[in-house]
Length: 67
Picture 1 (cartoon, rainbow, N blue to C red):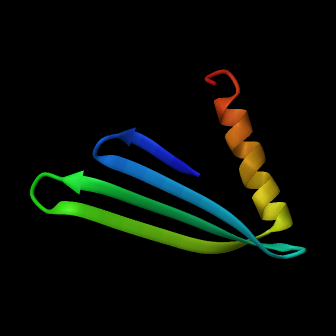
Picture 2 (cartoon, helix red, strand yellow):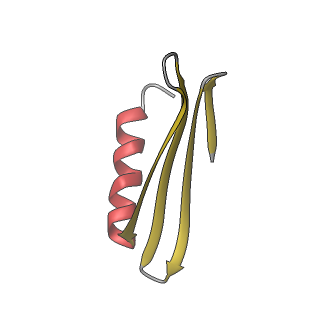
C-alpha cells in the first residue's frame, strides 16, 4: 500500500506472507527536507500471525471513530 500525504511525503507499507505463521512487515518513508533534499527510511521486521493480528486490531481500535 502506498499513501501519498502530499507532493513531498510518501509512506509505503508492505505485508508479505513468508509461511503459515510468519509475515514480513516493511515500512518505508520517502520525504523531502528543505536542507538535505530527498530522504528515505526503511524498517523491516518479521511478525508472527498473532503479532500481526494484534497490530491490525490496534489500528482498527484507534481509528474506529476517525475513519
